Length: 152
Image (cartoon, rainbow, N blue to C red):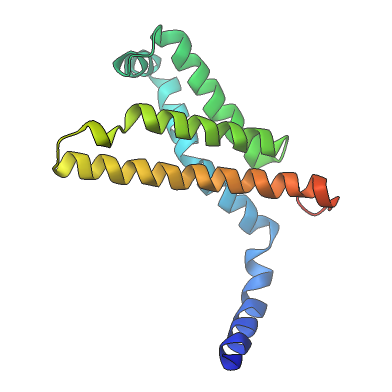
């Protein structure tokens, strides 16, 4: 056990400068937000399709709801990446992701088969994404509790 702890400490010593750097954090936040940036931009580029998508999920009226979804996805992602009220942006995308997932990927209502399996996988992938946003919220709010200045 002691040997494993020493190996872990040595590996952590090598990895810490790279993975605790500001560029690494920025890339991680960008990657976490990328699904919302891409879908938000796609919806913005084809707003009529975005409105039809909302209506297809029974969300009416489709156009105003699509506009709110686009605004939420892009502005919250910008908040997270920039650090401006990051915890608000990440908590917003966490809640949005959970709600959207329960609306769009209702695998439990599907018959057994490949479609249900695919929807179940996407459902839980989105839950993992929401967990990532929740962790960003936790870390960002942690600075307020601890008073640390190195979390920007």
